[in-house]
Length: 409
Image 1 (tube, helix red, strand yellow):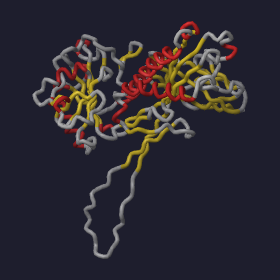
Image 2 (cartoon, helix red, strand yellow):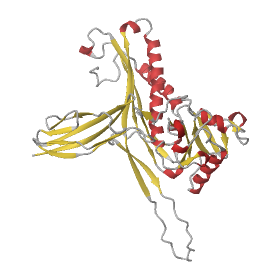
Image 3 (cartoon, rainbow, N blue to C red):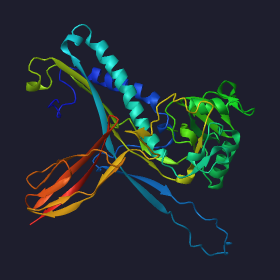
Image 4 (cartoon, one colour):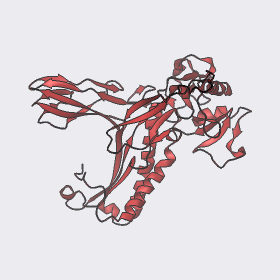
């Protein structure tokens, strides 16, 4: 571990190179953002705490009362509800040895940045996908009533697409600017759907200028974006087949944070920048840090269609909703509650994790006030407060939450 948290870049890296590397990282992250591109985009709340508010405006009722001549009506007012979401940080880095850098430092820096940028993009997209995968508006192909009942013959057809469109219209969900909804679909599911006679391939668009990233065609007022990162529930169907999830989305269904403006940061530490921890100037690092959250704003504005496919059971790609042997439609998370404890006494933290039983690590910011052991048991030391951080690591991605422990005398 490098003790160099106060410096983002070493002094011998020019401002021009810092900007270049940062833009290079974002350039390679953006192509991976399939799920992020259709949500409300919000800036990271600088100096505003860890929570971000997504605002939702309620529609106005029809004004059916006739006006009275010369009388000003009562008028109306905006009704706003807010959904609060807590941002979290994710990141990774690559260590480069002095021997590796000896021949061509810029080439290695660029290669590392390219790989890290793609990793950052996939991580950001995965976070959003796991949130969207927990939506409650669900259709099952083939007339099935549950995920466990789906078979390989229950393929996605135009019937389910038309039904999803009907549901969205029923809830007055707004399509995107071109009048179409958007669906995020896997290659396996797309293979089955593209055999429909009404399918319009992207190559046959009348106006192909404004296509979405990954767009492959449209059907019944829905434009389809294909990605191998689409929802999949591994082994969750009948006879253990893999179930594919296709998200049909309207405007304002969900919100997420931007990668620009501090959402995604790039860090370059040159040889020797860690001081005494690298006395022989043997290590340099390149890394990224993502500050991110995503939240469903209106469940009715998004429909998840679950289906089998011609290729169900082949295991073509890893289910990204499977971790440590657990399969669920809700992504990993951790929450820990504030509490109080008397000085000289002990008390266990109330911690909830998804998946249940995930290994949690704890740290106390002010051990002079309270300490915490590996089991989450807090010991009050002296009157005051300490912030406790709880963390889980699922498939290399860290999830954290914090609480405040108040120690009473």
